[in-house]
Amino acid sequence: MKVMKFGGTSVGKPERMHQVAELITKDAEPKIVVLSALSGTTNALVAISDSIAGANRDAAKRKIDELQAHYHQFIFDLVQTPTARKSATGIVDEHFEFLNIILRISFSEALNKDILAQGELMSTKLFSVYLTEKGIDHLLLPALEFMSLDANEEPNLPAISTKLKQQLAQHSDKKLFITQGYICRNIRGEVDNLKRGGSDYTASLIAAAVKASVCEIWTDIDGMHNNDPRIVNKTLPIEQLSFDEAAELAYFGAKILHPTCIWPAQLNNVPVKLLNTMQPEAKGTTIEENAGTVGVKAVAAKDGIIAIKIKSSRMLLAYGFLRKVFEVFEKYRTPIDMITTSEVAVSVTIDTDASLDQIIKELEPFGSVEVDTNQSIVSIVGNEIAQTPDVLKKLFDALSGVPVRMVSYGGSPHNISLLVPSDYKTKTLQLLNAGIFGL
Image 1 (cartoon, helix red, strand yellow):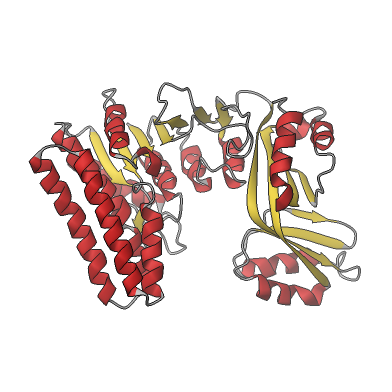
Image 2 (cartoon, rainbow, N blue to C red; image 1 turned 90 degrees about the horizontal axis):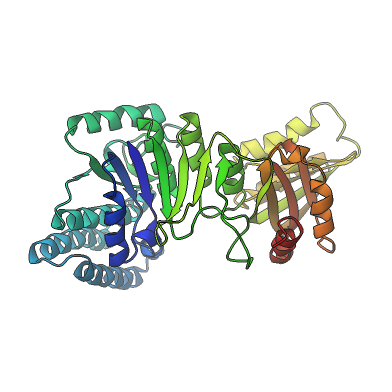
């Protein structure tokens, strides 16, 4: 069985949804197709939820009406027969009736999750109507019946696998299943989600649960590129990456892939392919256990980084000092991306300021604390690059004139990370593209 995931841009226009139908029916292999919400829908739903939370219900009502009008036009171009249009209109109006009802309900976080789930529910139902109109046999498989979180708000893969296999066994005559990405149920049985980009995660979890032959992630770009094509003019798609390389790139800023979606596939050794809906003939990128080659593959950048330096000549070398520092970040559930130490100081980076004031307050008894905001981590990723000859020389020769704040080297055999001011991120990526890749 194959898993195919299509993102918001791949289903964002009626003609794109038509194309998805062609892609999923090209071969006879059984498939589970995971769809995101139509592009722009989740942002609109977030804005609606924010307006309701802020007691600005008039603004929320306007946004609801605008989004409903967009869906009505989408339906008109998606399906052609009166029966299909009536069915699709009924689906959309039912979901927007819900959104209008919640204007009269007290806002809560649980209600917010219900609002955000509407996009995936509508996109899959509308796609199902289109497939029915075209006579394509399929089954709509509700993700809320098998996708679940555990008490730590992490996907419960054993439970997902058990429930999904039960659902598939009940419909053994079907070869094509459509389901929602992103949405799930939490430990209390409430509607929840896998956060932004979670449709990739859904696809990978499903692929792991059914031990799929492949997990295909279809987007609007032909695979993972060696650099950020939004910033750097000359970039190239990467044909093959290992799971470890892809995980590093996703975590450190490669937008094409959700950072969490690698481990379920890696756990069950399911190859992941990154493919382009607009250019389905392109090779894209294959992610599997084997890296293929040794050396630098790609560069990625992660913004919104905060550097924290704790300087203490008295305590740094004392037994247990680093443990006490890390315990502060653990207390506030704030992960550390990079760490460097010297004789009198330790510097770490974090990617959220949610608990920054409390963290600083608890670190101050250990020594002086300096905070630098508006930083970016630039990661150079490749198989065994820590052992690649001259990689550091090429790296620093390329970055002459860039104020590098921190360097992380040797912690991973696949990654060298640099911390630079965000104002220098674009320049850094462009210089690395020329200095390392010769582009």
